[in-house]
Image (cartoon, rainbow, N blue to C red; front, side, top):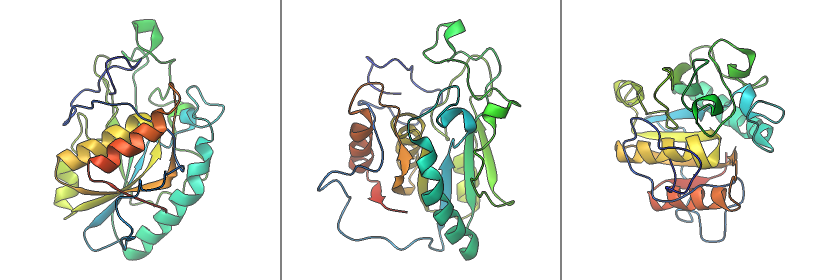
Length: 226
C-alpha cells in the first residue's frame, strides 16, 4: 500500500503500484491544489465515493483515526449536493472475516477491525448516506486485503455502467484506503476530485498524510474543499 518500509502490506487487486507513503487531511500546503480553479460538482457524469467511514475508524474505535469524526460534516454537505442533483453515491467499507490476514493474530499490522456484521463495521452514526447509495464491500475473504475500493470489487464496472467519468472522494484514512482508492481511480481512467477537508490520516509515520495528499495530486487528482 505504501513504501516497502510501511507496516501495511500492499492491497490485493491494486491497479497501480504506490511508491510513496500517505498522511493527514485538511492541511493542504501552499501550491498543493491541482490548479487555482474550483471545479463545479456534481456534474452530469460525477459520482460521490465515500471511503470507509465506519465506526471502527472513528475516535474510540478499534482502529480509530484521530479526528476522524471531523469528516462527517463536509461529507454530509457533499452527500446532500449529490442527492439533490440525482447523481450516484457509492460508499465503500471494510467487511472482514474474523480471521482476516491484516489482523495481528495472523501476522498483519492491525488489530481486529470492521469484522463483518459487528457494530464496528457499521457506517458512522450521523453519516447521511441516501437509501439509494451503492455499498462496496472489500477485503471480504480471509487471505486477501484491499485498501482500495477498487481492489477485488466491481466498482469500476459499476461506475462505468452509471456513466461516471469523475469521482468525488472523501473518507478514511487519507494515507491508506483513500490514497489507494484515488490512485486506482486514476489508473482506471476516472477523473478525481479529492475533498481535502473530508479526509483524515493515520500518520503512522509523521507526515504520511501530507505525502499522500501530494501523491494524489501528482496522480492528477484535484484537491478541493467540500
